[in-house]
Length: 316
Image 1 (tube, helix red, strand yellow):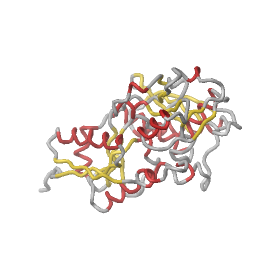
Image 2 (tube, helix red, strand yellow):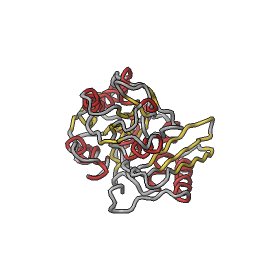
Image 3 (cartoon, rainbow, N blue to C red):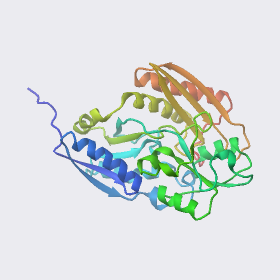
Image 4 (cartoon, rainbow, N blue to C red):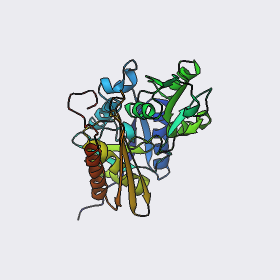
């Protein structure tokens, strides 16, 4: 007679060593410890953390933040990796799965400035910092007069650069600021109608080896099904567009009852092509329906003029 799968005696979480990444890993650690597991952290530095002088879209995309963590999983030095879901490539390597998506924090973008309360208050030609192609395209659509400058580094580094006067304002994910106890730095949160979030923004995803059923079972109680279905649809839009997290693409869903309303936007960071925005909805009860909605919306984006990523192009 086969025995039930055993619970892991101890769990090691691979994590980047930025303050926000450590907060996220420690959050998962506390939840698992609360369920009786022994959990330790394995701090790591990724290529995404090391390359700070170039835009991610030009050096390999946000997958640079997860590769070293996946190697640790593959070599058995760690059992799981906790990620900001918007940093996770749309296609995981063979043998890896997204085992858990947790309840989403505020998914909106935050306007941060020491002198101005809103984007509208910025003077003509003001300098706004972001290295996100999505934010760049959406900001240019809202305020074509602004000067958008690159902004890399962890949350505290970006805030320091603002405080040094290099920018009139910067745009960050509200979730990161809130998790680090820095909500007081937020002057305004952009509503999705104004600045549509990135696929998965504000959600934590936990990656494991697909063979580790014991870890998958241990994570099951931490999952939030509504968030997981929502971000699955959002990520399907991006995957169907052939893009990585570095593509100038936004996708954001919200449930009303069993109906998932999904919005997507594609913009040209150089401002040569018009912003394309589409929306659709469907009853979504499982991952197949979520993926189908995202794929349908991606087709609508392309029909409306959005340009899918081309292999070998910096956005691909």
